[in-house]
Image (cartoon, helix red, strand yellow):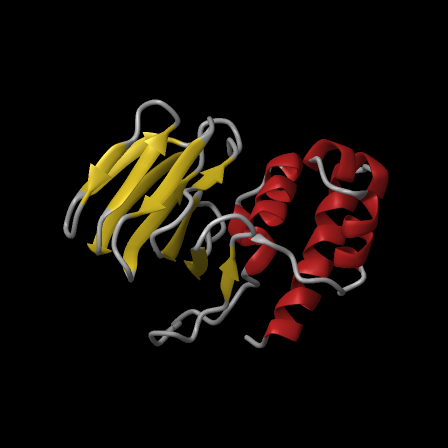
Length: 184
């Protein structure tokens, strides 16, 4: 999906979810902690949303992150390496790519995340009951709830509650991991 198509898709989903909740643009912006003008631009199909902005909106709308960025697709889907839409962090050398969104009746998303050494990505709490599963495929990471972070290397797996603030930090160039977001 091209970046323009992604932004237009995000705009449509934001409008639909906001209207489904019966809340105003101003109220959603307040709940997400973002400027009303930013949300207005996003709903108009303009702007370049960051991971942080989209997560805040997903939490405020009580929906999985992927619902905002991954429209429904065909029954068999192949995503070749490097083809997914990468969404970058504003504050850390961190990028997330949704590989597979939660299908109807399920509550999980599959992401590929990459990071470079630098400031950690500080993630806000996700919707209540969210658990993250992280499998490191390359490099070295420190991740987990703030104050309970663990260090991981290739092949290591960690599971932790993500409905509280948590972090991701890479210690080696090209650090990569598969992240499964599990929602209750």
